[in-house]
Length: 91
Image 1 (cartoon, rainbow, N blue to C red):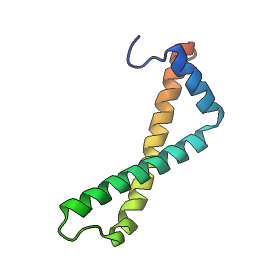
Image 2: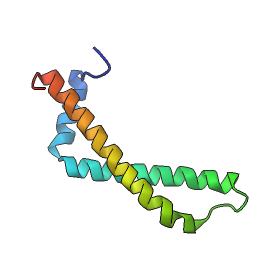
Image 3: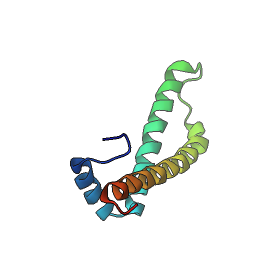
């Protein structure tokens, strides 16, 4: 199987995920992405920046990370749907 094909286990998992809907997937994925990136950059800033952690930077970075997460979540959804349809023969 190629990199862009789903096996039966992946198909079953995706069927459960897609049953919950695209919006919930994208929002959940986007929020998880934003939280992970925010934590990673905050820890990095704490140790690497001479000023340490700066909460005021979150006003700028958090909305950017949320938008990035929503874009990433949409891309992941579309890729998974394409793979799913490709393996079911409907693409």
